[in-house]
Length: 261
Image 1 (cartoon, rainbow, N blue to C red):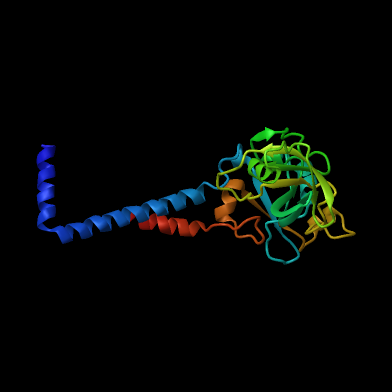
Image 2: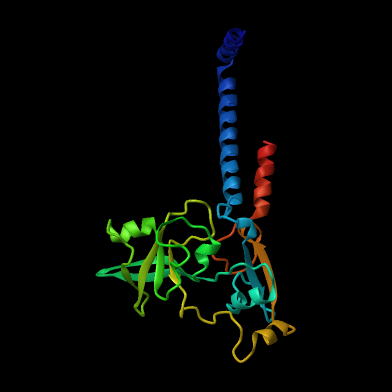
């Protein structure tokens, strides 16, 4: 039976070669476009879902004194929110520097790096190849890097315990951990993490000569924006995100076009 269907299909193709080719090519292009769109949609939806407990991690943004909302907030939040709200198990602060100068001997290079707390790797689950995630950033002058970066700059030598000069002010940082490269889609793009001990500045923090309580209760002082980690990439419209965000509406448009193709 199937053999007969196959023969009939071949005869029809031979009778109308041009028409058949147009249909086959059109079908192939349509399937290829649908596949590309599906892969794009899947990639956008998958951001940061690989982290353990991703559904329990939240990012806090802030708007204050009639300024537009920012994806960054006062550093004092990290210390005060756990005191005022139950259920906050850990917090971490991240300061992004897109081009940190690193110097090792006569070799200099620039890399994106995050200055962050010792709790960063307790909140975000990276796989440690060397070092301990609980203690890797506890001491001032500690740094963690990915395996790719370690192999690039240490060329087969054991990176753990190596000292690198960081920044124009030439501060010394010691490699205390190596993590597996994160190949999943994530807003967290860094391959190097530096201890923020004695590094973080007031930035957008509480104004001088005003307590956190006074700042919080000021009529124009502060509004908070809380996003679940899995929602930040597609649903946040705050300024100064740690990396470029996507657009959820576009995904629905693309998905609709696939379904009605």
